Image: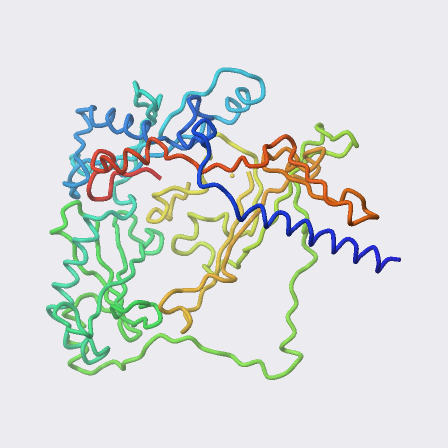
Length: 479
C-alpha cells in the first residue's frame, strides 16, 4: 500500500510540474501600462530605504553651497584640497523607528552622514557631518573630526606613491629586479613588474602613531599576479599632505630589511644575501590516526533571539534563529597590527546590547589607528584562500560563498510565504482518481497577469543625460 501511495504522489507531482512548465513557455513580453511594476522610490520613503538619486543630488547641492567647506569637484581633487569622500544614509535611532513603524508616531527625519577630507586646512583633518533632511537639506550638525593621517586611502596619494616608487626603485634597482625576477619597472616589454597590492600599516604595528605608512607589493603584471608573488615589498611614508615629501623608509627583500634603495644597491653589490622566495609548505599526513579530524560539535547549533514576553498562540516565545554558514578561524595574532580595531572578529559570534552610539562594528579610520579602535549580533565570516592553478584566469567561486540567515523561529503563526502575491498551489482534484485532473489555486491572481517592469525615472535620466548624474572621476560617491 505504501509503495502504491508513493507512486501516486510522484505521478501527481510530475503532472503538476508539467502544467507549470507549459504555462511558463508562453509568457507575454509586456502587460498593460496600468499593471507595470513601478521601480521608482515610493513617495513616502521607509526609514531604512537607501538614499535615492534625488536625495543624493540634494545633499551634494547643499554641501557645495557651504562656502566655508571650500569644496572642489572630484575631477580636480588633490591632497591639499577639500572634497567629499563619501556619504550614506544615517539610520534613525532605533526607538524612533519602532515608534513610527509600530505605534504610528511621526516618521524619523531622513539624514545622511557625510565624510569630508579637509586637506586645505592649516592642519589637515577629516570631518564628518550629519546633513538633513535629505530631501531638502537645511542643516549640517554633529561635527566630528579625525586625524588626517588616519583617513582611508585616496587616489591622489596612491598616484603620487606609485610615481615615487617607479622613480626610485625603477631608477636605481631595475638591474636587481631583472636579475632576481626576470623583469623590471617602466620600459619592460613583455616582462613587466608592478606594485600590484597595497597593505596599510597600523600605527600600533609601526610604533609610530603620528605617521601614515603603506606597504606596496611587487609582482609580475600578469592576469592573476597573486600566484606569482615576489619577496619584494616597499614601505612608503605618506604622512605629509604634500606628495613631494613622500619617501621610502623600508624595503623587504630576500628575508632582509633595508632602510633605503641605496642600502639595497650596496648589499646586492656585496652579495651579502641569498635570493629566496616565499612559498607554501606542505605537510603530508602519513597514517590513519593522524588523518582523523574532530570538530567541536558540542557548541550550541540553534542560536535563537526572543522576547519571553511575546509568545505565539501555543505559548512558545516568538523568536528569530541565527544560522551561520561561513565561519573561519581568526589568523591574526591578538593585539597585533590592525587586529585591535576588529576585536569582535576574535569570536565567530558576539552578542551585545544594542546602543544607538554603536551603529558600526568599526570605522573607516581604524585601519591606520590601531591604538584607539572604535554591537546586536556581530557575525564573523571569512575564507582562507590559498592561490592555486585553478584561480586563473578567473577565480572560481564554487564552495566559497559565505552566508548567514536570520530565520523566523516560531515568530509567525504560519509560513509567511502563504501571503505571497505569486503563491500558487497545485494538487490532484481527487487523491484516489488521477483522471479527475488537477486543482490549481492562484489565490485570486489572474491567470495571464505576466508583467515586465517599466523603466524607472532614474534609468531614463541616465540614458538621456549621463553627465548630469555623475562627475567624471571617482571620489565623490555614496556607499
